[in-house]
Amino acid sequence: MSETRGTMAEKATFQVIVLGPTGGPREDSVTGILVRSTSTNWSSNSVVAVDAGTLLAGIIRLLERYIPECTDDRGMMTSGPFQGLELPCRTAQANAAHVFREIIGAVLITHPHLDHISGLAINTPILEAGNGPKPVAALPSVLSAIKNHMFNDVIWPNLSDEDGGAGLLTYQRLVEGGNPRFGRGDSRGYVRACNGLLTKCLSVSHGRCKQRYHPESGTHHRVGSTVFSEHQLMLPSRAISVDHTDGSFYSPARSPRLLPSNPKEPMMATVESSAFFLRDHQTGSEIIVFGDVEPDSVSMGTHNKRVWEAAAPKIASGKLRAIFIECSYNDSTDDSYLYGHMCPRHLVSELSVLANKVMEARDLDAGVKKRKREPVGRVEIGSEQVSPRSKRTLSSSTDKGRASESLIEPPLFPSESFEIPQIPKVDLGDGHGDVVGIPDPETWVDTTPLPLEGLRVYIIHIKENLTDGPHPGDQILKELQDHGEAAHLGCEFILPNPLEGIWI
Image (cartoon, rainbow, N blue to C red; front, side, top):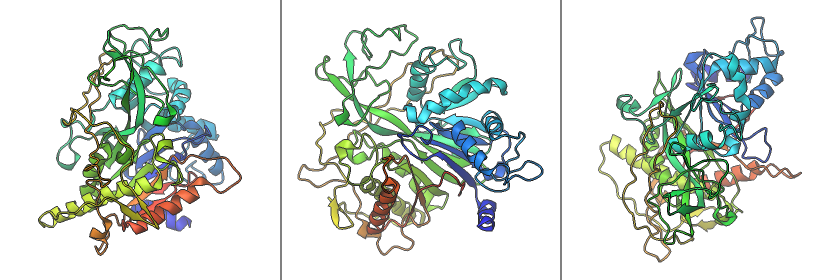
């Protein structure tokens, strides 16, 4: 086995360590992923963390498992997820602190829910013995939430380098969809994530929530809040009107243009999350890491489609080999209880959209005239008919325009104020139950190779039930495999082992 791992490591472009593979309720295994380019050989600032629900705790847990049995005379790890890493200290705790301070170059945050940022808050104080502030990169709305609701000297000390903080963190505001001022060719829009890796961030939906619009200030905020002032340089605090039937608990600031018909009534807003494209600077190979995400079929818009459109040519050319995406619940969960998450039937429907885009990209590469793929109202998955779109009726949109891009704020501003782009509503067809735009998998059933053949889909953020029964991941994986085979996708579904590194 060790020889096989060694061969994989030699051929791999990326190494991924899933420190936190679950979505709770255990606090020590929630989302946290480390990614590095193998070309950097664990040099300083050569690892990027995607989310930080679990960070130091996960690193310590892994090092304790392999120290000292898997450490040579030079202090180098000879096996395990940190194989090849030279450890300067004796204990797992001290070496984990070294990894956080010196090896992790930046932290990318997909969205500001606690299971994705709690480790960042608790771990950050040890950076004071490091070499400057640690970059925290995310979409502007995500950083606004972290800045105003966590590192605010109320919930947690202001450890950032803004507004007179301690200067242990520095915020890097990303342009949604990529910054076209950076990069050329295939890497256009990508920015540096850490040594050896570039990144581009696309916005996705993590459900919806209700907010109350304040007609006088033109913002959504908690009336009478004693925590956040209405100072012009402070983003107003968010009004949170939790409705569990709507499947969401928090929303970043939304555009004041999204007005409810009655200003006194709460309005629906999309909870913004992210999908990070990570690109190896040397080879151009890529992977995608999603934050929490819901299917477009039950969403207020079509964000995932944009991700698949960007990913498809990369899969067709062999540059994109792996996707890390959540699948929190099994198929017994009704749409109304998904709370902005995925289950197998929806994830396979989403991947079918991706497969269709890959087939179109192949046609373009081959110089074939674009084939018309007839949509179907249902996709046959296993023994049941599953609707790729929710039966739930959404109110019609009056704004069909394309969203404007999020703006990047210069770091010198002490606080930010911006609009989140509106997104087009889902097209629910002609009202007779059929759905527009879902591809028929029979279109590529005889295709060689299948559209997603060679793509590995790693499943993260599984909600544990903490019972004596089987792990919920077992059922989720089986359903994904059955659905994927019925949809003729060709991809491989994998539950990552947090005790082993993933070589891609």
